[in-house]
Length: 126
Image (cartoon, rainbow, N blue to C red; front, top):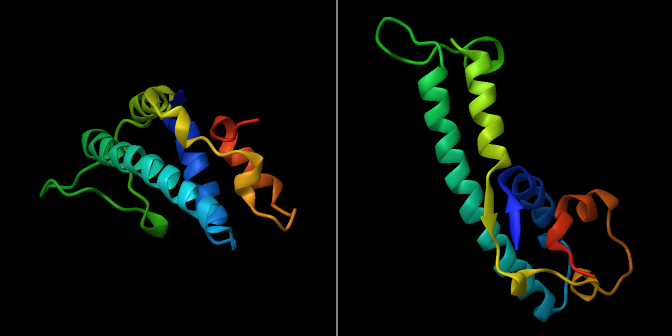
C-alpha cells in the first residue's frame, strides 16, 4: 500500500502508544513488525529533514547552525524550508499490505484511545 511520509509520522506515534498496551503475543508481534517498517521510513525522513535544516538554516561565521529561544534552529530561508518539508511529507512510500493491522490485533480489552486509531490511518484494515 502507498502511504505518505506525513501519515507515517502520525502512525509512528500511534504505534508507540499501541506497543505500550498488553496484547496477545500474535498481535504484539504484528505491531512490532509494522512499527519496525514504519520506523525505517521515519528514520530516513528524519535524515532528510536534517539535510533540509542544514541547507536552509541560519549559520554563524563558523558555519554552525544558529539556535534561538528554546534551542530552536533559526531558518535563513523559512519559506523554502517549509516548501521542501511539505514536499517530503507528501512523498509516498510502500508498506507491505500484510503488515496492516486488523481490529483483532488491537487487544481484547475493548478499549483503545481514538487518537491511536486516527494515527494508524490506512495502516488499520477493516
